[in-house]
Length: 392
Image (cartoon, rainbow, N blue to C red; front, side, top):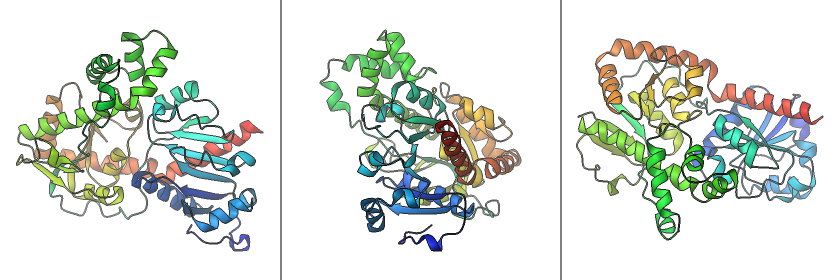
């Protein structure tokens, strides 16, 4: 699975030859792609991972050797749209999409007919089918890492009561929005969306616009700003609620020195770590909180990482998480519109170790069996095979 000049004589005989393109300057997507490459390799596929600009890959593309080597490619966040070889041959590419659909909707780069976008949210997948033309779309949830050993997760002493992963976000889009005629509308949407269980599209359409065309134009312009602002506002509210109730919160993330809670004695901020290193800290936590807004949909890798590392996951509920986990047996939900429920549950499970351990053992068994990148890679291959049958 390592980068090398490929010699087909060295390949094992297997069903598929796959190139994983780590093309995005983002440590989270790179972490996911590395897990997928590793999982496919363990399943006896010829799986190779290549960084952007790798000379061997550029050589293969310039010499039009792509189709003779690989059955399909895997990348992330819709990269490599503009590379000529994708336009000039029938290469199949599957892309993990970590952002909301409207972050990509106006790129207007989905010109490759053999492109499959894999969304972590079923809702975003359905919207993408409606609003992003030129590509195919499928649902592929996040998952837990398989790269590092997790077999001894219940043997270590856990010294962190509550752990949350979040950067402190200043409003980077605000200046652009302030000067726009829709600034008042944006502020009203922020307030409604934060306290609503409805998805952003319904809020915008119901309260402010009356047809899909107007809604889409607005959401593609400001959806990412609204979504990021409300998500961080909720994370901040969660952390603040816990620390004012004298619960120690350990937080991995950048820029918290700019916040008003940075010097609170119950707030312990760690320097930024890459995703793989930050997730290892879950091994030391009793509780990992996944704080999401009421309209949260789909999955998040924090949920599965917490479970496979022996921590109790307390999270905002989603329909998907309710389908795959049993509440209070494998996972604990809190009401994002009533943070007193979060405080109550955190205090309860910190003081009832037997109950906490019972849930974490159940969650570990479920997540290790069904929700790592080993299982997701099998689902990914099935998506590819279904697409090829449909295409035939």
